[in-house]
Image 1 (cartoon, one colour):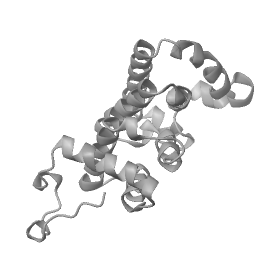
Image 2 (image 1 turned 180 degrees about the horizontal axis):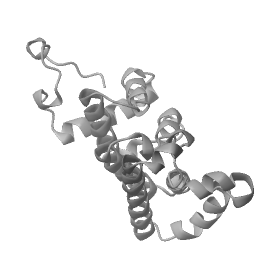
Image 3 (image 1 turned 60 degrees about the horizontal axis):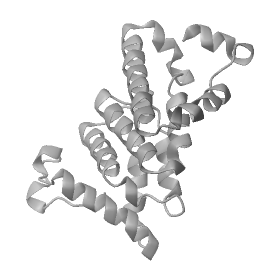
Image 4 (image 1 turned 60 degrees about the vertical axis):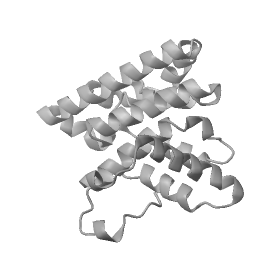
Length: 198
C-alpha cells in the first residue's frame, strides 16, 4: 500500500519483519483516503487493487489483504461515496467464499463498521451479506466434499454473525433486509437446481 521495506529486509518478505502498528496502518489508510481529494490517487489506487486479491493467495498477499481490511475498519469515517466509489464497489463485490477464515473475519468486521458508520451504506452492506448466502456457481460442486461443507459453514456463520451485529447497531436494518432478501435470493422458478444444491 505504498510502504516500502528497508533494503536490509529485502531478502525476507514475510509480514512479521515489518514492525508497523495497527494504528500506524490505520493512519496510512486514512491518508490514502484523504489524499484522493487533493488529486493524489497512488496510495488509494493501490488500496483498491488490494481489495481485488482473491483465489489462492500467497502468505504475503493474504496478510496484506487482511491487514488492509482491518485498517479500513478503523478508517470508515474517512470513506466517502463521492470520492471512494471504486473502493466501495470493490468491497461490496467481495465474496467470503473466496477467502480463508482470517480474511472472512476481517471482511465481516469491515462490513459491520461500514453499516454502523453511516446510514448511507446499510443497504449495500446487507445486499453484500445476502449475496454471500449463496455460493458462487463455481463452488457448487465443492459443496459435496468435506472441504466445501466446511467452507459453507465458515461463510454462513460469519454472515449470520454480521447480520446480528448490524441489527444490534442499526435498529432500522431488519426492516431494510426483507426487500433485499426478496430481490437477491434465488427463487424456486428460476434457480430450482441451484437452490436444491445449497
